[in-house]
Image 1 (cartoon, rainbow, N blue to C red):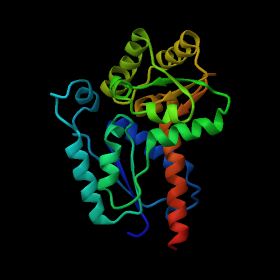
Image 2 (image 1 turned 90 degrees about the horizontal axis):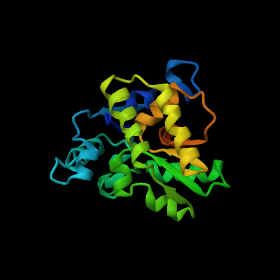
Image 3 (image 1 turned 90 degrees about the vertical axis):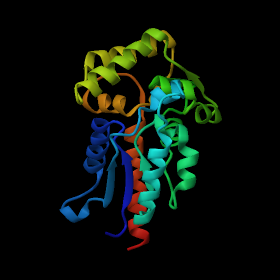
Length: 239
């Protein structure tokens, strides 16, 4: 197979499935051959990212992801994309190990947010506790001249419930009222201008329950757009 990219996924699997679905839906294809060439690494057994970031005595997920990157290097993809926000804690190490460009989900999300919400100043971050505590998004938000606003403990509890119980435990089921309640709480209680969906499970919630009025920067949707654009560019340049 020529002109393909590699997707590091499986963190979690239902969210990765959402990414693939969005990517395929947005590809301007009228026949089988018009779709993108890619390899999906659905590495479901990668140790829990948040568990490690909150407690370094827990299994470290970096060795598994480094092994995936090195394995994909042997196949010579055009680029790699990793569809897990929390795993970007080790972005620098993974990008350094990659022989090809490695897309950065938090960086691309903040860049898109600036383009689509140029007047935004206060940015709410809806994400796992691991993403928030480790500052995965912090540097990009601050570099963009924005203020990061993290959830209150009460809102975080709702986010955790949506991610781990509604979606992970119930295999992709989305509690739409709970998702909309989280967005409303962040807008009204935290007085933010826009909300980053900094977890791919939240992106799945957005895909399946988009009927709300709140401004969001959906990291997985944005990554799908960047992936599509880059894959198209490589295919045209190397045709």
